Length: 451
Image (cartoon, rainbow, N blue to C red; front, side, top):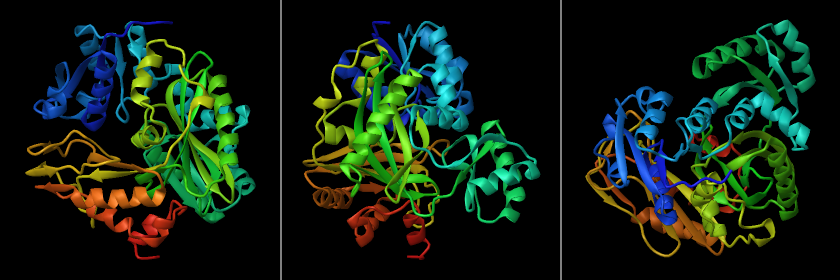
């Protein structure tokens, strides 16, 4: 259905809100920025065409309150709502509520979010579409260990118990031996119930040394799909990505191309609309699907840099009912890009560092991009995620991109709060990271002095 989006409500905050505002200006769309009381005076609020405070600092009473956000959108006569990432971005009820109110949701339908948000149904859908998956038990695991034990033996040890509604690294537990299964199952189900309101879990074989590789897709919901290459997100701490890059070093292009075709087929099969990401573990030359994120990713800029493609503007165009205006054959990646996530935290202890930024100087220069909502005088609240910026560097080669990132980090100045920028700088001097292709456990092992 063709729409006419003239006013967009941004149901998020921080740097992604600024990024969406920029896409709105590019397309001639008015931006409406919601905020909590804690963010009322933040620069990202003032930079929108309109803004509206919808509740207290608590995210549950502001950025996570579906009723308040939809009411705000109606009050401001918005034609569409962009959820960004985090908060309600993968909430099927939010998508349904926006569409029911007569507005466009910038993302998939509620039914698709619901299917892909449940890791069990998502994996079944991918298996049906021919997407390679990790061997496991996809039945909803009960609390009865005796019933589950035979299935665990079929999967093989070590295995990992995962929450069906999980995300953000929560609701996962590795089991090395059969005698650990009962305790681990009970603990994971309770963690899943508390974190996601759903105690359902499933089993997968645990891969010892995988890389984390994801494919960026864009679909118009009308049967047209493009894949904008892959990203390597293996540098992680507690399942949280630290540094991302594109393309993934050392993976044969024919493997990526074959996987891209399969994922395109899967998108058509589920009726996908918008930007999304297929996430895989890659070990011994084999890709294994782990989940699909039905939203824009934090790390989308590295893809934008190597393809020269505005993913956020594309989201808005697709939500407006446009058919894809580019084909797979017309996409041509160029060079290499990296992204460092800058958090307001101690680089040694990782403790959050809220406070007021007394000095802020961003790096500049060819191939350097900074995505942020901060400046001198910005107040970093303890109420929300600690990420305050992303530094993205693009160059013709990976080595040049790393060198450019080192220089950018050296030029980046933040005073008044602590950041993890010094950690990024140290990591880029590590010979294993410089070479590329490290597994998802490498960073934690390094930080713990095990490598």
